[in-house]
Image 1: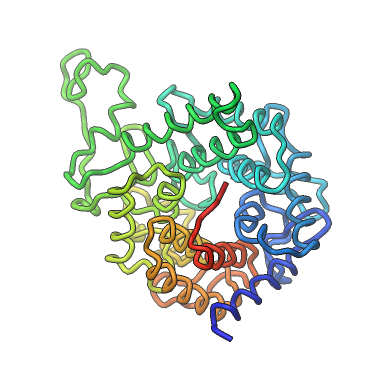
Image 2: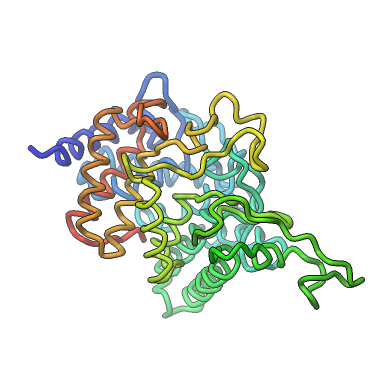
Length: 396
């Protein structure tokens, strides 16, 4: 049996061991995460939904249902619920509802509840810039300084809008048309605001934060505006990880750029540039590192709270995340790079088998560092396997 098939069968077993009456636990390890996390369970579902196992399917649908039961009165979906289903946590709230929208559309469609969740997200476009905002460290990188307008958050928003549109037969109803129109608008704004052209010019990424726009170089009193200087990846082209107040993240956010590809935000040229970047910087050695370059003490995006978990090349700060490796493989298939996708799947199988479907690995050595038997590491391997097998990608 090939190693990719060995990893496939072990991935199915990992997901099965994560199943419980409340939903899909984030990890089956005794020392792991036993809560039902919105993002973990719904990301796992991207691949696990293809497994014809009633235990797995029941746990996935229970995740959708029990997360929905704890929805706030204004529409937000919790970050996680505890293993008894009695308590909910909303701290890292930003992407939970978007993953829930994608997962529920695939597993247990609820059009009216989906509209309520989307209504909450529309209110997160707080400055009417066309993209939604978040507090620091409130998406999947819940110990990293992503803030303001996050790239991965807004690419997920596009996916979630398109997933919801399908519930209303897309362009055949007013609700479907509205979701598609908003998805296209968000995608256009992401391309306009986040895509860095490799020319050192940061003005296009911060100008939307100016109060007056008659002249983007000077304010209403004629004073020259301060424009940040690009220090890292100056000559590269990619989507910036976040846009803050007159500032922007400079590192390459692997998941955000891949979600841009899979959401259809990235066009052919951007897709080619992103995938070439990942290969050229050897982020796909295992795969795949979550960001580059790693944030160092003294950098503008360094935080004291990174210690001890987020040291350079650890965890969210440049660690290798197998679940992102599955997303990467899917993006390669979507781009038609089938030979590269098969190679990525093979590397991902070895990484997962070595680490027992670990949560994350050291970004340089590849050493397993996190919790074993992680649901989304297994679920995204199943997604990658399915995409390579069928040569198709269907997230929503």
